[in-house]
Amino acid sequence: MTISLLQMQIQRLLHCNAAVYIHHSLANAFDTLREAGLEEDVMVEHPIDETLSLREFEEELEEKFHFTLELCNQDSKPFMNKSLRLFQITPCSGNGADRALDISIEQLSRQSKAS
Image (cartoon, rainbow, N blue to C red; front, top):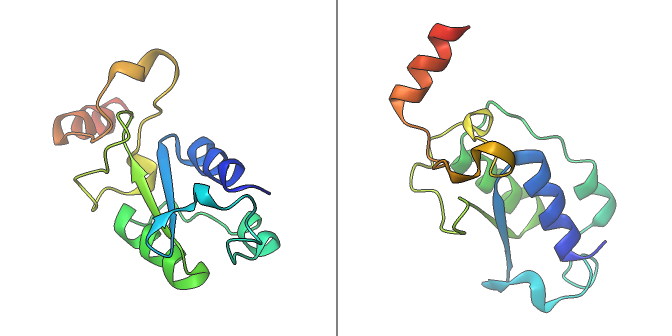
């Protein structure tokens, strides 16, 4: 698997942009996960716990796989609110593409009233 495919898989699962860093530089310099020093099989099967905050998820991957993943909004700028839970990220494709991905308290309260 290539680094680009890993990024696309994470982006599809989490509905946001992702930048992967290895050895403090963008991982796109490496062609494959193995070349970058990542265990392909373990990474592909790694479960995503949606109750984690963005910061906890990034720290978990860094600790377990020794690379840095930075989750970004649709402008590829890192999320400012790292305390957001993974399940709170809204999709950046389809009809909601023009919405900001850092969810406001207003939106969350509207969502909870609707359910």
